[in-house]
Image 1 (cartoon, each protein chain N blue to C red):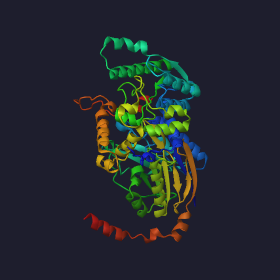
Image 2: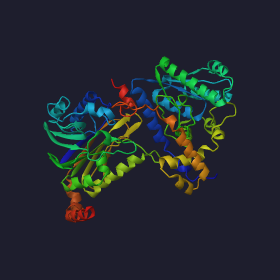
Image 3: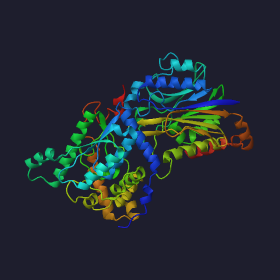
Length: 281
Length: 281
C-alpha cells in the first residue's frame, strides 16, 4: 500500500498541542483538588509522552510512574521506561506482576495468550488505582485515538484512568508531539508493541501500519468521509471496510455499560452532569 | 468621545454561582481602579458553560433584589456591566442570557437565540430559544449584545446593525477545537475571521469576550478581542490565562470611517425585505 498523500493532513502544531494538553492535565488534576498523578510507564511512546507532559504539568516530584513488567516482557521495554523516568526525574517504582498473575494463569491451564494478555493489563490497572490512593493522585491514562478507535486496548485494563490527555491524538500525532517534547528517539521509532508476549507488535497484529490506518481513520472520523469516498481517495476497499467494521465492533469498549431505562430519570440516559461536577466544594 | 472598555477573560467554577460572583466582584474592583467604564464578562460567566442538569439549579432572575444580582447592580453605579447567567423566566423556561447593568438599573437582557445542538454541543436540550434581537441605548451609545452561536449566523449582527447598534458586545464560552498545523486552533481562526468581518462590514466596534479554563475535556480558548469600524484589531488577550483586557476606544472613529465608507448609509433595507419576502414565500 502506498497511500501517503493524507499523512501530512494529520500534522499538528506541537507547541500548541503541548500547551493545551499540559494545561488540561494541570486543571483536571489540580482543579478537582489533587496535586499528583500516577501512570504506568511501559517503555512505549504513548506512556513516555504522557509522562513528559504530566511532569511538565505537575512537577516531577508529583508524578509517580509504575513500571510493571511480566517475566516475558522485553528487557528493552524496561530499559526504555527507566530511561524516561530518569530523564524526567519523576518518582518511580518497579512492581513486577508475575507473582500476581501466574497463579490465575495456572488455575486455567488452557488459557490463551489473549486472555493472559488481558489479565496482565487488568493487573496493571489494579496496581495503578491502588497506588493512586497511596500516593494521593489521579490515574493518568495513556490511550491514544488510533488504539481507542480500533479497540486495540483492554477494557478496564489500559483504558481505565481518570483522564486521557492524548486520547484525541492519532499515533502519528503522538510521535510528532513526543519528538517535540524530547522523548528519546529510539522510543519513538521502535515498532509499537503491547509486549504481552514475545515478538508481539501492534502492526503485526493489526495487519497494517499505523501511518496507513491513521490516514484512513482521520478521513472517516475527523473529516466524516463516507466509505466510498475513502475508496475513491485511493484506499483499498477491503482495508476500508475491515477497518470501519473493527471501529464499529469495538465501540463497546468506548461506552459505559448499558443501563436499562425504567424510571423517569436514569443514570447513563438523563441523569446528566459533567465529571467536573463531582469536584465542586 | 472615548470609552474605556474592559473584557474580563475569566475561568469559572462549574455550577458554583457564589464563587463565580466573587470573581466578578474582584474583576469589577480591578477594572474600576483602571478606569474601565464598561466591563464585559463572557457567556454564562456566573455559572460556567456545560451545565447539563445543573442548568435548573443555577437559574436566577436578573432582579435588583436577587442576592446574586444585588451586588452587581450596586457595582454598576461605578461602571457599566455585562454579565452572563442562566435566566429562569416566570413560566420556568431557561435561557442563556446576558444582562447589561448601568447606574443601578437593568438596561437590557439578551437571551441567546441560536442554541448549537450538534457535535459537541447540546444547548437545545436544556435551554429555550431567545426570540428577540434588539439594540439598546446606553450612556455611551447604542449597542447590541449577542451570545456565541448568535454571531455564528450573519443575521443577528446584521439586524443589530440595522437597529442602530454601533458597538456589538459579543459574549462567548467557546470551546477550542481543530488542532492542526496552524499555531491557532481552527475554531479560533474561524471566530476571529467572522468577528473582524462584522466590524468591517457594519463599520462598527466589535468587542468579543471569551472565557478560559477547562470543563471536562473542553478547553476554552480565550483570545478576547476588540475590532474597530475599519476592521482593524485594536487589542487581543492571550489564548490562555485569565486576563482583564483594558481597551480605550475612540468612538469618533465611527465618524471618520463612515465618512470614508458609507456602507450603512447605502444599505438598501427595502430591497432586502422585498427579496427576502420573495424567497420565503
